[in-house]
Image (cartoon, rainbow, N blue to C red; front, top):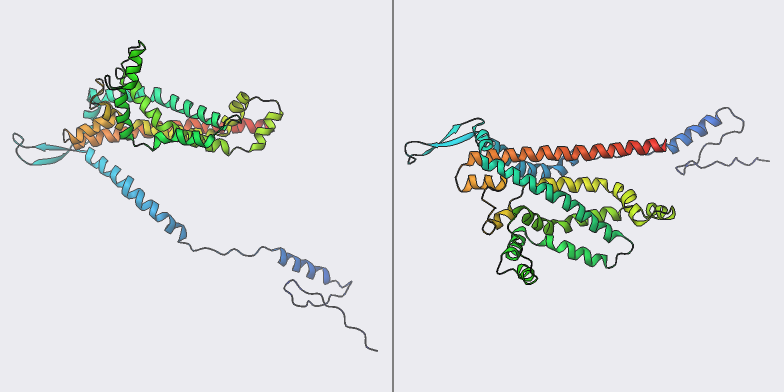
Length: 345
């Protein structure tokens, strides 16, 4: 009588495995080796080594063409002056002046006054912009708000208007005799000169243009907060004001820092609004901001070296303020993270 053949177990790849006698000393190592081979992750396929460089190439080409080359050309122009021989009838000659254009710009009272006007504008505009856009975003994010999409669209529409058109609209509203706003105030017995103070007039135009844009950023950050966190705070007894100040604001701090950084950079580039108001506001001159000073030096006085030097000085001021804003916001975020970890410990 023939004994039946032992049943062969299938291996993980489907092929029959060799029978292992029970009690044999080599059975356990064979099983463990097969299990380790099965549990071992499959090797990853290595992508092409030049793929990241190929994807980043368009960015670096545009960054070089639109940023590095213009900045380098501005620095080059700022080191030279053009001098004409004789009574000015001869050809212009480019002469190396070193930091002469920088000293001329810093020694010009009009250039320094432009920075004073810009500082007053930033001190008034940046806090109002951040507070107003953040307040409107919190109101739209509240549970009591209705027709959120409609109000988002209505508040964002002024940003879709080009800056030149917006400045022209507000110049019409500021001008006595044609402005319905001033006529309404006069009929109510209120005498108002909206162009008497140029800084608040320009701040008002900028707020009208950019509040809706920053509101969308804050509202998107608020919508990204997990609803479980807000529900837990409601269960703990926190009211709407406490939730907004203690829960929502700390969680959207990165968005707040980003908006503050972009607002600082944009404020230092102020040009369109005061240039449009130049013909109507008596206090706005052609050198009212550093950007207007550079424009006047380049296209009215044909002094490209002075214009380039003033532009480089403005860029250095923007870089310094951007560094301070980034450092300040990053330091506060790091400090709060350390406090949170200490509380958890």
